[in-house]
Image 1: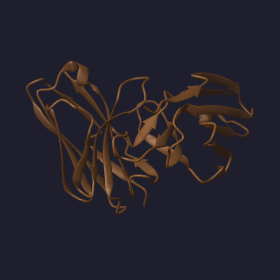
Image 2: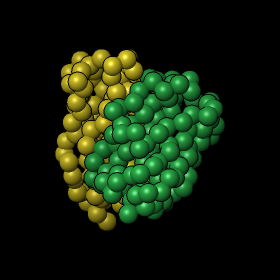
Image 3: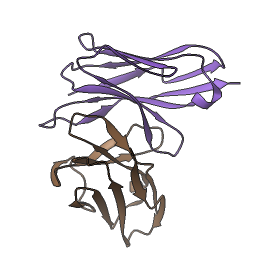
Image 4: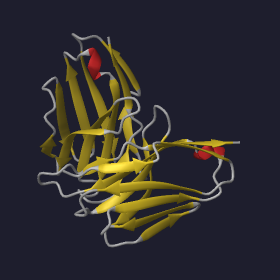
Length: 114
Length: 112
């Protein structure tokens, strides 16, 4: 059974810092890995999708990497801003048959202090 | 347009009520999902529809009944819920089962 772990569970940084969020998964048989952002009481916003054949994806100040063989992904946020404060969830996508299509980690709660 | 629309945004219902949650997408996605999320927990999968057919039911109690009337619409019918069913209910869709998933803003359900 796939398990996804995110470290740290919570992170507080001053504005302007670069930071790294970590995600690990136990079964490398994935289609893709997706990073989401969730504001309190709101839905999930897709940030980046990395296909299993890719090594990284970039969008603005965000860069996500994937090392499928070691079961790890990182989300790098450059020059953090107070507006980046949210919970960041990583999820892996697996084939339907017998498996849950999207398996989520418990998230990292990020607080960026002005 | 990458929008998944859920209605209502908030719902309060009694344990004897019958209500429905609605989810709509116009991206031509063929897979649609219902997730349940409790506070400070990750989303938990409830149901998956693929090409308008129920493909996964994660042992969800029968008081939750999904329906997919067409490829753009997904409903979740609620009946005789318990207070512990209070949660954020999220709908998602993807082009296929292994492509990028897009989530709605959720329905905050409170059962009293």
